[in-house]
Image (cartoon, rainbow, N blue to C red; front, side, top):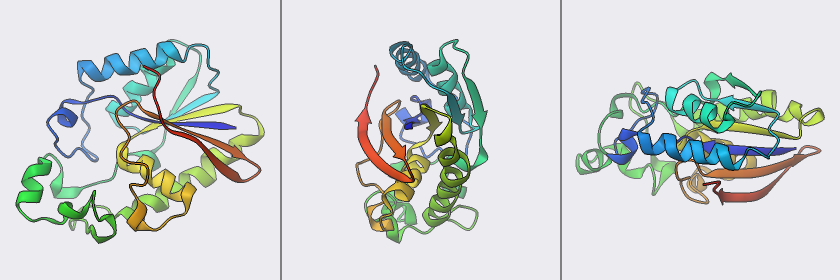
Length: 201
């Protein structure tokens, strides 16, 4: 079974380099265009089912990739983006300038400490693993290809589960660009990484 893991299209906050997390931001016109092109180029690729984060930017991306085809989209809270708590809405530059824990997020993720109302990367990886074990892996018996449409950090949480590496290597392979696709093969309980940087636009 193939698994396509997609990051949502660009949003206004992506462009402004503001932290989104669990804040429900819509796609920007450029993000819709990328998702639409991705869907057009995947029209001849069979997709049995799509799982999406419930956040609008992910669900709209999933719907545009579906492109009118009869493919069910199921939302799942376990693949919503990391909750950054009170950091959300702030610019990356502002958070780094103010010497917050966010300064570790991309370069030394094992040192990142969430705000009191935020979520840790360990918690993120746990829910990503729970989703893969209980939702995706059982589909192997009757699906050829499934798609997951979610977010930059949660998709890396999924890959941390797949690769079974330490938190220091959380960003292994780099942050996905908007509408980039990670392609995995899952067969007899084993994952094989086919491509971590595929685009269909």
